[in-house]
Image 1 (cartoon, rainbow over the protein chains, first blue to last red):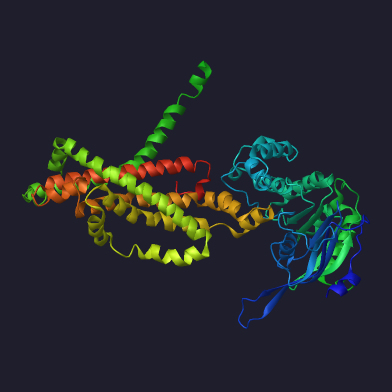
Image 2: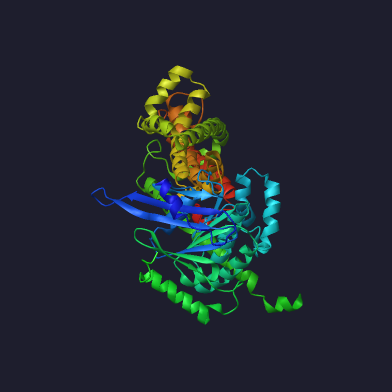
Length: 276
Length: 275
């Protein structure tokens, strides 16, 4: 298995040497709940790579294994075969080194916005006063300074996701995983937050993996899009997004955008799916 | 100032009216029910000429309570001391047990069945043994209170510590949390409402525990007073002791509920037993 992976290694498209994050031929199965003891394949031979400062989207329908992929990358689940490399190291301890943001904000209701945001720093052993100071510094850029001492259950869904992202990004991690971060929000709030997210992450040199079922979200945010098909979780296409950065106002209705959207729709429908 | 006075003269009285209305809605039904029941009791005893040693009318229970107030309060003090010591012991043991059970599979398998089994043995059968083992002083009563009230604390807290959201735990792990940190910063605070549910039940049953302990053998306390008053056919005094006990139990419950309200003041309402 390992001797084959070298031949199939994906070149880092940004060309900055070794990719930050690399997933090599990962397969993951679940023992099926249905009688018969069959196993369900959730991820099949999934490979992808993300360079430093690159934003990659994994696009696919619900239930195609996207979240499982992120859990494997985060180190929460162990793949049946294949490997995940951090800065080229397949043995790197990934738990606690990869930032992970979920669709649910998962904010602790008994902690204020700042107390929630500083959680990762606190868990990393940074003294509370210092963690607090650093969280407050960045809260301003996240548009959270006015609600810094409010409790999360008093905030709107959009604000709560900002807090969740602040918490995920405050500890310095080279990889950020976003699991449908705006999936539970209304369309208008979602569009606002997408724009804001692009700005916030613009200057960082993190490798970002966004999982989404929203084609426009993938195109607005990502440099590259992997198309994933269910139910057995395969990558069926890879598309480089040829759109200017930062994305200009009204890009979503431009001809270029629509052409790329059409390409992705076709890939999702399986028409171009077999070409790789 | 003047303008606002003429502009909103209705507002303060309206707020006061609304507040009075909610207060009335809270208190009127139980008060009315109690008044009706007590009135019916008083009337029935008088009309049917029931002898006082069989069933005294509420008026004479109140009279005895008033006349022997000092005596009642003295015994209530003894009982209260037993309850407070027993309740504290139950809280310390109950919380430690729950922490152990929730964090170790081995402890859960070995101890939890016996925690449950301990409640299948009636306390009334253990109390005389305790009397033999530790004597008629306060210790035996404190132990009976602790035995009866640690159970709701342990069971509720174990449930609370286990109720942590799977995704929350994963979120903590991806932030690099150790098992100990997950326990202290996630499981413990999310179990706090459960702990208080257990403490409220424990506060009420601790009163029962103290009375049982005193009933079996004591040198004082409201349970002992009831035990010695009944054979003397001083039935009104038994009722007076019951009255004082109920008030005691309610005060204990309210004290725990007050502590709960303070401890959970920053929790969202849906997460607690508050209305």
